[in-house]
Length: 220
Figure 1 (cartoon, rainbow, N blue to C red):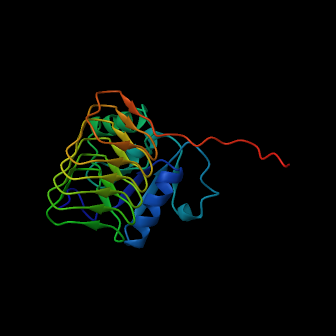
Figure 2: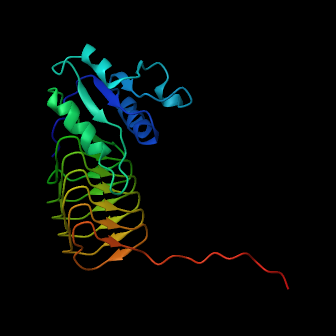
Figure 3: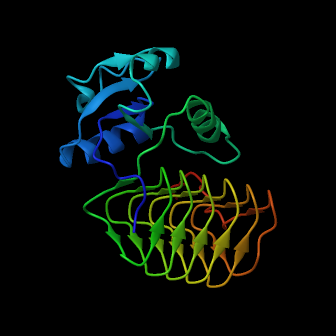
C-alpha cells in the first residue's frame, strides 16, 4: 500500500543523478513533469529534454500547492540534512510530495510506503514492512518482512535489510551492506558499503566494512 500516488502533474526538485532516475521512472509511467527545479545546468542529461527548468526554488510559486505534487530529487549522503531541509521548506508552503514506485520493483500490497517514499528498479519491499516518509529504497535494495524503516533513510543499491529491523531518522545503509534480523539502528547512524551489521547501532554510530588493501604490482 502506498500513499500520495495521485496522478497529478509533477514538479521535480533537483537536477542531478538521483533526480534523473526519478524522471526516467515518472516518464515511463506517463506522468506529466511540469518543471525541474535546479540551479545547475541540466542540459547534458537527456532525460530532462523538453522539460522546463526553474533555476530558483522561489519560481515554484507559479504552481499552486493544489495543482501539482512535488518529487524530491535530492539524494542523501551520510550526515547530510539537505533532503530533509528541502522537504521542510516546501511543506511549510503547503506543497505535498508524491510517492514514486518503479514498475520494475516489487512492493507487497501488505507493505506501507509513507509520503514521498521512493522505490527504484529491482528493489523489493516485503509484507509487513513500513517505509518512512521521504525514504529512498535504491536500485536492487531489499527490505524484508516487518521492518520499520524511519523517515529520510537511504537504503543504497543492493543492500539487504533483514526481517524485523528498525531504523531511526536519516539512517544511511550503504551499497551491498547487510543488516541482520531484529537489529535497531539509531538516528543518523551509518552502515558502510559492504558491511555486515548483526547487532544494534546507536545514534550517529558507524559500522565500517573491512577494506581491501590496494598496492602497486611489483614485477620480479
